Image (cartoon, rainbow over all chains, first blue to last red):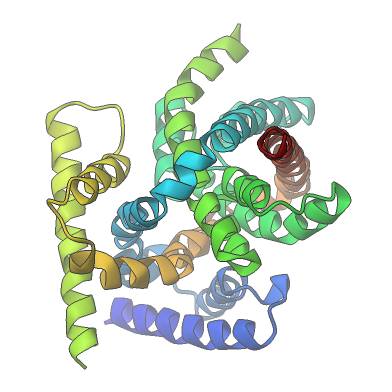
Length: 226
Length: 124
C-alpha cells in the first residue's frame, strides 16, 4: 500500500515539476532535482525508510533499462548523421571518458577521500545502469555511484551552458558530444534543448561513452593502482 | 486512445525484449549488461529490417521523453547516504564539478576542432 502511494506521489510530483520546468526552464527547477528533494523531505518528515519508498519506486527504476535500450531508435534514425561525424564523436568521447575516469580518481585521491569513494567516483559520468555495473566490477559501491551519477547529471546541466560560452563552442556536433560524454541522460536532455541534432549526437556519445567506460574502467583501475 | 494502447503495447514489448537481452547476456557470460547488448541487437534488427521502426517508435519515444522520471527513485536513494555526504559532501562536490568541467572542455574543444578541420578541408 505504502509502495503504491509512493509510486503515485512520485508520478504526481514529477508531472507537476515538469510543467513548472516547461514554463521556467531554470536548472534549479529541473524535475530531476526538485522531485527527489521534495520526496526526501517528505520521507524524512514522515519517517518512512527508503526501503518502503522503493517498494513503489522500483517500478520506475525497472523502466530505466528498457529506456536505455530505446536509445537504439534515435541511433537507427540518425545513423547517417552519426556516420558523417564519426571521427569527432569517437575522438571526443574517448578523450572525454578517459579524462573523466582519471580526473575523478586523481582529484578524489588528492582530497583524501576514502578509497571506496574514490573508486565509486570513477564511472560517475556514464548512464546510471552502466555506471553501477562498472562500479561493481572495479570494487566500488554501486548505490553510492548512482548518487554521483545523478550529481554529475545535475551539475553537468548547470555548468554546461557556461562551458559552451567560455570556450565559444557553437558547433551543434561538438555541443552534443560535450553533453553526452560529460553528463549522460541529464546532459542529453539539455542537448535536446539546444537542438535536435545536438540531442541526437549527445545520445550516441552517451552510448559510446558507456560502452567504452565499461571496457576501459577495469584496465584504467589496474594502471592507476600501480 | 488508439495511440495510448499502441504506446503501452510497445513499451511492454521493449520491456520483454530487455528481459530477454539480460538473460542472453547472462547465458553467454558477456561482460556487457543486457541494456547495452539490447541497444546493439535492437539497432541491428532495425537496420536489417527484421523489426520495423513503426513497431516500436512510439513506445521508445515515450520512454526517452520521460527518462528523468526513471532516475528519480535512484536519486531519492541518496537519502541513505546523507550522513556520509554531510562529512565528505564538499570534497565530493569539488571533484564532480572540476572533473565535469575538464571533461566538457576536453571533449567539446577536441570535437569542435575536428569539425572545423573537416569543414576547412571540405571547402578547399
